[in-house]
Image (tube, rainbow, N blue to C red; front, side, top):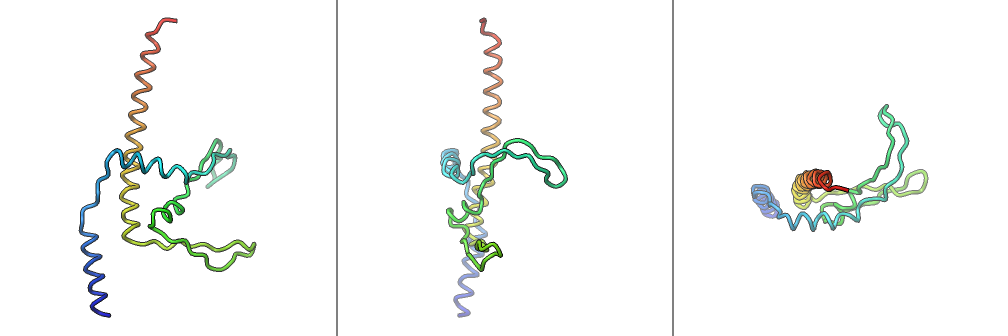
Length: 134
């Protein structure tokens, strides 16, 4: 038993000492396409949250469901609420969760870069449109 624990500790130290993987543009684009199914449908919001009025269109991203699909978490039902619905907990697997955090951070940076590129392209199109005579 002690040998097994020492082996797991060694493996964990080795895994956490490795540099984090850097994902390519193609891999991040593929990740973007795969996670689109975890967005709920847009809905109108007109409420007060944290003392501020919130209005507009909102969309919820189901991060826990994505973590389960990625293998970083396991969904566990334990007991029932008074209304009869199950109480759900998520148990996270450390190594897979770390990998998910790594790709998520890189994805967020990639998304900002894509937004910046789109803004630059739209600025260029606006200038071009101003030059075209109607």
